[in-house]
Length: 197
Image 1 (tube, rainbow, N blue to C red):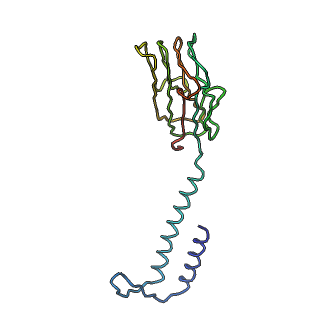
Image 2 (tube, rainbow, N blue to C red):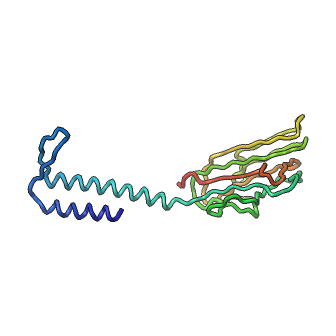
Image 3 (cartoon, rainbow, N blue to C red):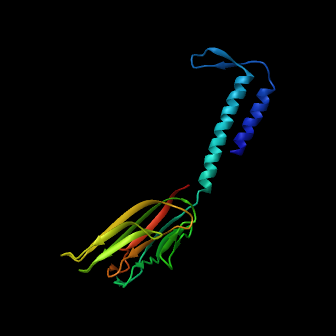
């Protein structure tokens, strides 16, 4: 990039030192005169476009990489509990940016922006399941299942949310409800930064 810019500057200096008109050939092979003023304008246009490209490249390089994906480690049933409980997904597949805490099950936004989150839960007994994706203390989306004739039920939900620095996102299991995990990743939680704001 810098070599191209240096070449353009050198070309500009060479052209600006010449005052005579230079011939230009268009698509119809007609000769036209190209003044040093025209060349200067074209150079300025190229320099402006190059500046925009450099700014876009810089923004892409500075965009933080935040993404996580994790599953429950539990072997067996999780719950029922007497009060709502944050699920702790400690089997980490990826945790770019370390915004997800595998000890607490809580994702904390260190960058203001728009985020994508998804979670999946599984239950293989004839009982009740109720979980929610939470932003701070507010419920965003939920997965619910009541007693059913079959005993294998799974549910997922997804949300795109705007987060401020310090906001927390987690999955809550409600009281007197349960889920199941046997180490195969039935119950998981993931999220990533779509774009900072």
